[in-house]
Structures are given as structure tokens and as C-alpha cells.
Amino acid sequence: MKEVFLCSICNVSNGGCMEDCAYCVQSLKYNTGVDIYREKSYEDILKEAEAFYKAGALGFCLVTSGRSLTPRKTEYISKAARMIKDAGYNFHLIACCGSADKESLKELKSSGVDSYNHNLETSKEFFPSICSTHTWEERYQTCENAASVGLMLCIGGILGIGESWEDREEFYKAVNSFDPFTSNINFYIPHEALPIKNAVMQRTEAIECIKLARRHLPNTRLMMAGGREAVFGLEQKEIFEAGIDAVVIGGYLNSNGWDIEKDIDAMKGYGLEIASACH
Ligand code: SF4
Image 1 (cartoon, rainbow, N blue to C red):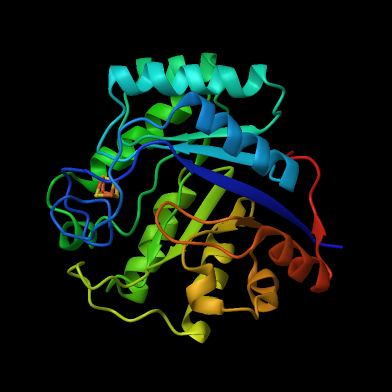
Image 2 (image 1 turned 180 degrees about the horizontal axis):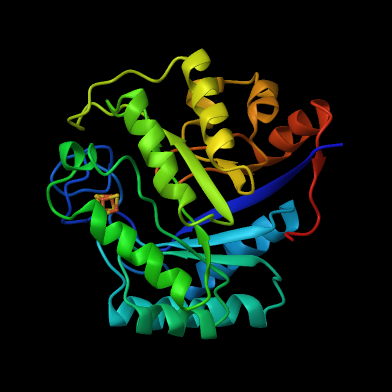
């Protein structure tokens, strides 16, 4: 029976970002109206960790908004990581905090962070069409930094933002150069305030994207993240047949997921087994 791994997200800071990624509601440049806050309390982080742990999530990802992992963020995320592990939540712990140097990443690792999530987002060629404030190369360098300090990698991206199939091929070749532990797939969710005016991707095209990712990343855990609900609705069996073997449960940074219990029941109904260990 095919296993599915459950991952979860905790947006420990949100919005207020000075970058201009055209697909992201957290950019200050677009008046999207999302909540803006700097540092979620440790108490709230632990409460969320407990709820996801009890729900069966194996992964828990601490996500900050903004371009990079500053010294203050490093200290804050490191403390949160130690508290989560000390509390006995034996998650595969992930941090997603933007561009980062080796020293900061080393500190996260020594505090109990297992993986670093940093997305290449799209192809090197297409990236300047969706972001002018930082480069794709900066993203690539951060992935190299994370690998060099011994962190496991989660490297994915967002599809349906105007990229071509050639861009998708090139993007997955670049992701494959890291042979990451996990790759997250996000499908663009339109927002009236964002400059990308594409509609939600059609289901058939999205399934082809998943198959493409699977072909390029045969050894990687392929995780369906943002856009799962918007693109596939309640009929999700096909995504697992196409190659998905992990999902984010309970919602994303700024969009809601399904009710966790119903979501898990649906996956079991497809004949999937919910994984009980991460490795
Ligand atoms: S850097 Fe991150 S948080 Fe900021 S706009 Fe880009 S994707 Fe959003």
C-alpha cells in the first residue's frame, strides 16, 4: 500500500515583505490585506505543534516572511526549534526563512532543525519576469549553503504563473541538481491584488506537472502544497497516482486547507496508508 507523509506549516511571521515576488500575497507592494505580524509567540507555536503532532503530521515547518534569515530570525527560530524538540514533538523539523548564509544555517541545524526549505520557484530564465528584487542565483546559493552545512533540503516552486513547459523542464532539472529530500509543488492561487492574472490551473495540466516533477525527481519525496484544494477539489486520488507522496495538511501560509480529519479519511479512502515515520 502506498504511504503518504503528512507535513504542516506554522507561519511564525507573516506579510510585510519588501520583495516583489508577483505570486506572493505577503509582498507589501501589492495591497493584498493579509495579516502582518513579526513573531508569533512561542506559546502559540507550541500549541500549533501539539495540534499537528496529534493529528499525525510528521513534518512541521517554521516559515518566516521576508527575504532572508537575519541574526534576529536565526535566534528566534533556533529557540522555537529547541522548544519544540524539548517538548517531545519528534517532528522532522523544517525552517523556511529565505536567503541564508552558512553560519546562520549551521546554528539552525545545531538547534534541532532537520531540513531547510528554500524554493527555486521557477526556471532561472523565467524568474526575472516574476521578481525584480532578488535573483534566482541568490536562491540557488542558499540551497547550496543549506546542503553544505548538512541540512536536508526541501526545494520546490510554484506553477501556473505564466511559465512555459520549457521553463518547467529547466526548473525541475535545476531542482534535481540537489537531489533534495523533498520537493514541494504549489499551484498559483489568483488574488485580485496580485499582478499575475492567470486563472487556477486546469486539473489535467496540473496532473501533467506532477508527472513531470516525478520524472525529474525519482528519489525525492514529492509534496503537494498550496493550491491542492483549489485545483483538485475533493477528487484527489489522481495526484497520488501521478506521483505525489506527501501533502501539507491543515492550511498554508495565507490560504485554508481542508478539515484535517476529513482530509485524512479521504486519503485512506483512496487506499493510501498514512506514514507513521518520516524516514
Ligand atoms: S521573498 Fe518570500 S515572503 Fe517575500 S514576497 Fe517573495 S515569496 Fe513572498
